[in-house]
Image 1 (spheres, one colour):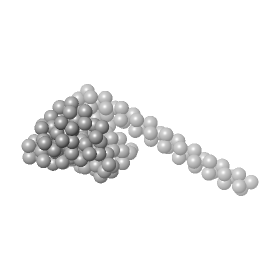
Image 2 (tube, helix red, strand yellow; image 1 turned 90 degrees about the vertical axis):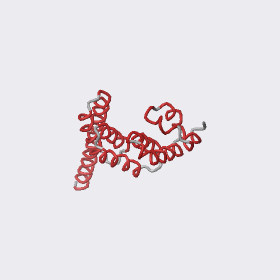
Image 3 (cartoon, helix red, strand yellow; image 1 turned 120 degrees about the vertical axis):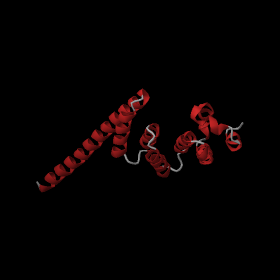
Image 4 (cartoon, one colour; image 1 turned 45 degrees about the horizontal axis):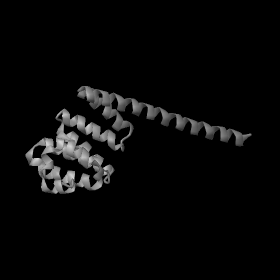
Length: 156
């Protein structure tokens, strides 16, 4: 009889864990969708709240951190934005998209950050060469595309 009680307790624990994981994924999905809608609508305060929730629910989710970084940059909270971008790169150092995002942010910060922006874009292109066409079209990266190093990486 005690074996069956032990099995029942174990099954209950497993079911509770699975249910909690499902509930957290639902909350994360809801926060992500809310954040994206708010960001696209220009409601940056709501986007910051929603993406902040994403980061709390999934601290190592790079895309959530990058969108929080974009939102913070749009709100001109530059120290916090840089923290999110650099943390995303540390979480996935092989993710070229994170370097490209950070390069766009740095390029927007002004001429004193261009060298760093070019380095980040070059690293992003090395890691994610499939993004070359998107980089050619991205208005935020226009100033960087004239650099000889970037033109070489873009095959121009």
